[in-house]
Length: 420
Image 1: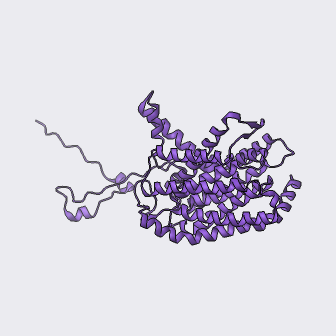
Image 2: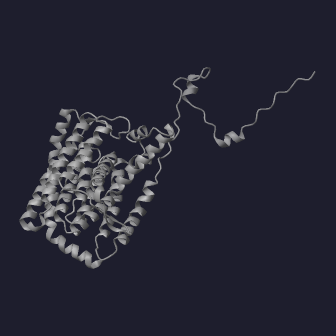
Image 3: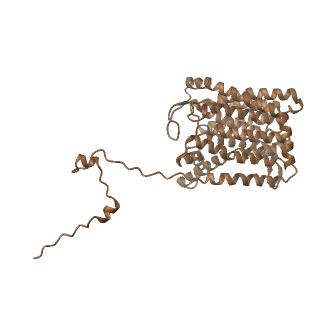
């Protein structure tokens, strides 16, 4: 294990400047593009007005995905150009990566449409499914899985279906976790760095550069998105980030790289994936209890109805501030993200390392996701006017009988019944 870490560190020394260049340019470009994207959001009417489940208190512009995509494109282009100059033999995935960034722009446009006028879940699902199909056309698909104790398993004719399902799962997970200022950006930055380290260890620097550009874009957007947020990611940002994770984790330069990157992507996104799975099961179960047998289509539609029982909602109800919730969940994403690095050594059984990674992640996340919503304290409503027969001064001064005085108060003697 120590020899493997030394080898990864030596390889990292040569590629580290390109990784830092991509992340720094993406962060700077995203931070600068935040202000024009805010003006664009106000002009288009993409304003998030506080209501219902929302935590913010003032109307806030969306379209954060526009700034994120611009930063990603600039950072990835600069880093990949440097890779082409210094290591032209590592540039085979460049056409696929260019296609991934282009399709991510189309997903951003879909999210912008939803930010302006809310799309129905069916139309949004259709748009994301189309993005998955375009990803298949670009040559990115999930052909292998790295399963514990079984090793690499070929999907065969189910590769296309698995790719589209993975895109839908990742986009939905990142979209649902975006409920607190800076939460989705922080978790996405952590997951991107962890997945970039895995891609680097697998000998795929091109994918690692693209992931570092995603991390830099998320870090630059935190300038506008940390509490109190001046701008939200919106669906243009959350759907785009989920698509990028799905696409880049499926884009391995070799068969083993694809299998390991996919498993590492699931670990890096453990927090949002667990939260979205909990939300789906919870909503479907309640719809089944309400509707009874049958009505499967209505039960599935009910899973798209939001609630206030996501993990960030429960932490907020326990008294944590939005900033502490974002920091707590981002730090919790570090453990499963770094656990993905245990999948890399090729001289050990894959199942053993996967089991160790899953155990380390479960120990951190199990307690967190068992958090229940705090019970609401009963509210006491005082009457606006004093009861009839009670003077105004007495109503303004409520009488409270202390326990000691209450026990010492003499009992009222029963009335004597006069004799005959």
